[in-house]
Image (cartoon, rainbow, N blue to C red):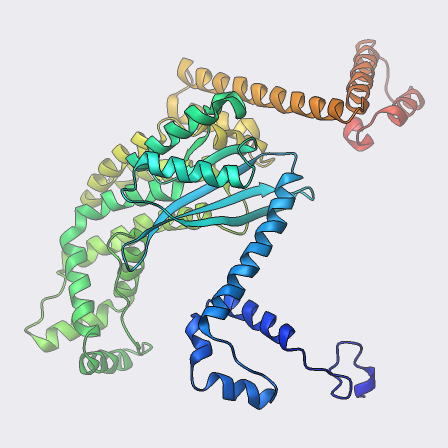
Length: 475
């Protein structure tokens, strides 16, 4: 039976231990599992490995670090070669991280569509940024990274958080790179939609600050003691609810974690109220505050869904921009909350933030929505007319989008023509000329009002030369 397992079956008689291969695989294991390098210096690590293979000799944490950096540099070379062969443009996302030692690091991620029309993304830099983290410092470091990667003539856009530092950084980059970018870098700056949602939701959270603080303090009180948690679990058992190993607290600067805390508290609402009543000395949320928390959780659920979509890392999400923004706008309409005073006030506050950032939708993301065959321009027209009425403003906005759609199309058409010319081929020109000629013939054919059924043979002959799908022409 073992002999039928194929080439991948392990054969001890032919196996030869390769220490370099093992070291390389362990390096990939450390990277994939995100393990600290100090694992190799555990007093049990080498004995465990030698129990599998006595010849194995462990290496120190510094060696593992060097091996991981070497893998990263090798990956950079592969990505660099792919990016240099790319005939389209590259977009970027960036953020600044602060280490436990209060040192700032800038992370820059590249996003592009490869020749196989597959979405690709790579972290191309994670570099220390000098203090203070000014707009000038951010722009200098980003520009240096782009130059090192030879990408300064392939940049399309960069997405950043909505901070004044990033606004200044983009202004510096636009002034330096405008000649190499489309339309003078006028559309290079992309504001992070997930961050905008965070700002809008945080504005709403301020309205029920007392409610949130009471829920947070109650959960913190119970979770800080094993005996208190055990007491809560006994109540949960009586209510036929699953016991809890711990109670998750939120990070106040991340609204979605606060929403998840509220939702968990609402699931445990009955048990928490009994716990407060049994203890007597513990203060918990009032009935009104519990109702406010329930309204807030229901209200913010679409915000959480939109954040997950905007924050997707495995697939593009720009084409969903208008749809998600439209969903948020509908949610904030006051007539949806006429029965709740807290939600009416909440909608007013959040509407002000919404209008500040999304009164004028991002042009590039709007164009991406048009390219989605599910939406096209008709969905955009529907949204604009609902938002701005049937009059002049909606039509003016649509005309503005159409104009830029045409400009971008012509720019890319010109780039394709230039690329064909640079390799000494006129195939693109011949194709366009031939297509134009056939289009004119077909237009004349239609204008003669001939019976298509009786002249199908002529149409068949025409379609043999037409370089597009025949079913499309028939339709």
